[in-house]
Length: 125
Image 1 (tube, one colour):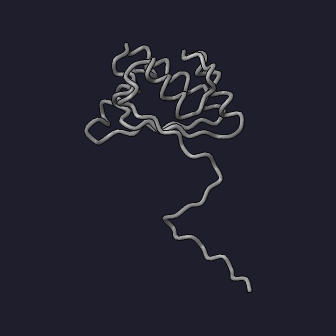
Image 2: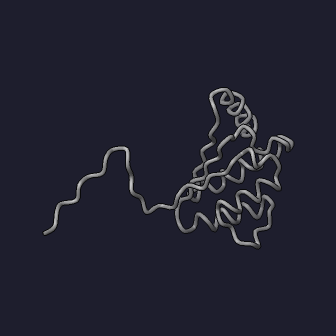
Image 3: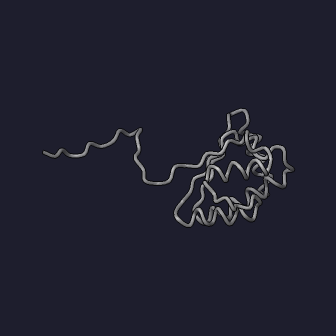
Protein backbone atom coordinates (compact mmCIF):
# COMPACT_ATOMS: atom_id res chain seq x y z
CA UNK A 1 0.00 0.00 0.00
CA UNK A 2 1.40 3.40 -0.97
CA UNK A 3 0.53 6.65 0.62
CA UNK A 4 0.50 10.07 -0.93
CA UNK A 5 3.57 12.16 -0.19
CA UNK A 6 2.91 14.60 2.58
CA UNK A 7 3.91 18.19 1.89
CA UNK A 8 6.86 19.48 3.83
CA UNK A 9 6.33 22.07 6.51
CA UNK A 10 6.83 25.64 5.30
CA UNK A 11 10.06 26.01 7.27
CA UNK A 12 11.71 22.92 5.75
CA UNK A 13 13.29 22.57 2.30
CA UNK A 14 14.83 19.61 0.54
CA UNK A 15 17.26 20.62 -2.18
CA UNK A 16 19.56 19.03 -4.70
CA UNK A 17 21.45 22.31 -5.16
CA UNK A 18 24.97 22.59 -3.77
CA UNK A 19 25.14 23.81 -0.18
CA UNK A 20 26.29 27.39 0.26
CA UNK A 21 30.00 27.91 0.85
CA UNK A 22 30.48 29.76 4.14
CA UNK A 23 33.61 31.84 4.71
CA UNK A 24 34.42 33.32 8.12
CA UNK A 25 35.61 36.90 7.66
CA UNK A 26 37.46 36.72 10.99
CA UNK A 27 39.73 34.13 9.38
CA UNK A 28 40.21 36.24 6.24
CA UNK A 29 41.81 39.49 7.35
CA UNK A 30 44.60 39.13 4.79
CA UNK A 31 44.61 38.11 1.13
CA UNK A 32 46.65 35.00 1.89
CA UNK A 33 44.20 33.91 4.59
CA UNK A 34 41.23 34.65 2.34
CA UNK A 35 42.66 32.58 -0.51
CA UNK A 36 43.25 29.66 1.88
CA UNK A 37 39.72 29.88 3.29
CA UNK A 38 37.98 30.22 -0.08
CA UNK A 39 40.04 27.36 -1.49
CA UNK A 40 38.89 25.22 1.43
CA UNK A 41 35.18 26.06 1.36
CA UNK A 42 34.86 25.93 -2.44
CA UNK A 43 37.07 22.82 -2.61
CA UNK A 44 39.34 24.43 -5.19
CA UNK A 45 42.07 22.23 -6.67
CA UNK A 46 45.51 22.10 -5.07
CA UNK A 47 46.99 23.98 -8.00
CA UNK A 48 44.79 27.05 -7.24
CA UNK A 49 47.26 29.94 -7.58
CA UNK A 50 46.11 31.99 -4.57
CA UNK A 51 45.93 35.31 -6.39
CA UNK A 52 43.08 37.38 -7.85
CA UNK A 53 43.45 36.07 -11.41
CA UNK A 54 43.47 32.47 -10.19
CA UNK A 55 40.39 33.17 -8.07
CA UNK A 56 38.56 34.62 -11.07
CA UNK A 57 39.45 31.55 -13.15
CA UNK A 58 38.49 29.14 -10.36
CA UNK A 59 35.15 30.86 -9.77
CA UNK A 60 34.42 30.68 -13.49
CA UNK A 61 35.21 26.94 -13.43
CA UNK A 62 33.17 26.40 -10.26
CA UNK A 63 30.10 28.17 -11.61
CA UNK A 64 30.33 26.35 -14.96
CA UNK A 65 28.54 23.39 -13.39
CA UNK A 66 25.79 25.49 -11.81
CA UNK A 67 25.14 28.37 -9.49
CA UNK A 68 27.24 28.81 -6.36
CA UNK A 69 26.32 30.69 -3.20
CA UNK A 70 29.11 32.23 -1.14
CA UNK A 71 28.25 33.51 2.33
CA UNK A 72 30.75 35.59 4.28
CA UNK A 73 30.06 35.65 8.00
CA UNK A 74 31.60 38.48 10.04
CA UNK A 75 32.08 40.27 6.73
CA UNK A 76 33.11 43.48 8.48
CA UNK A 77 36.51 41.83 9.08
CA UNK A 78 36.99 40.52 5.53
CA UNK A 79 40.40 41.75 4.24
CA UNK A 80 40.49 44.19 7.16
CA UNK A 81 44.29 44.04 7.39
CA UNK A 82 44.71 44.86 3.70
CA UNK A 83 44.62 48.23 1.91
CA UNK A 84 41.11 49.20 0.71
CA UNK A 85 42.10 48.50 -2.91
CA UNK A 86 42.27 44.78 -2.11
CA UNK A 87 38.64 44.74 -0.97
CA UNK A 88 37.71 46.57 -4.19
CA UNK A 89 39.60 43.96 -6.20
CA UNK A 90 37.78 41.15 -4.39
CA UNK A 91 34.40 42.72 -5.15
CA UNK A 92 35.40 43.13 -8.79
CA UNK A 93 36.36 39.45 -9.04
CA UNK A 94 33.09 38.43 -7.37
CA UNK A 95 31.10 40.69 -9.69
CA UNK A 96 32.68 38.98 -12.69
CA UNK A 97 31.74 35.57 -11.31
CA UNK A 98 28.20 36.78 -10.62
CA UNK A 99 27.60 36.89 -14.37
CA UNK A 100 28.28 33.13 -14.39
CA UNK A 101 26.01 32.25 -11.45
CA UNK A 102 27.78 33.26 -8.23
CA UNK A 103 25.71 34.91 -5.52
CA UNK A 104 27.35 36.45 -2.48
CA UNK A 105 25.89 37.42 0.89
CA UNK A 106 27.90 39.51 3.32
CA UNK A 107 26.63 38.82 6.83
CA UNK A 108 27.33 41.08 9.78
CA UNK A 109 25.65 42.19 12.98
CA UNK A 110 23.50 45.34 13.12
CA UNK A 111 26.28 47.38 14.74
CA UNK A 112 28.57 46.78 11.76
CA UNK A 113 26.02 47.00 8.97
CA UNK A 114 26.31 50.73 8.19
CA UNK A 115 30.14 50.75 8.10
CA UNK A 116 30.16 47.58 5.97
CA UNK A 117 27.68 49.08 3.50
CA UNK A 118 29.83 52.22 3.30
CA UNK A 119 32.97 50.13 2.76
CA UNK A 120 31.25 48.19 -0.03
CA UNK A 121 29.89 51.35 -1.66
CA UNK A 122 33.33 52.97 -1.54
CA UNK A 123 34.98 49.88 -3.00
CA UNK A 124 32.44 49.68 -5.82
CA UNK A 125 32.72 53.39 -6.70
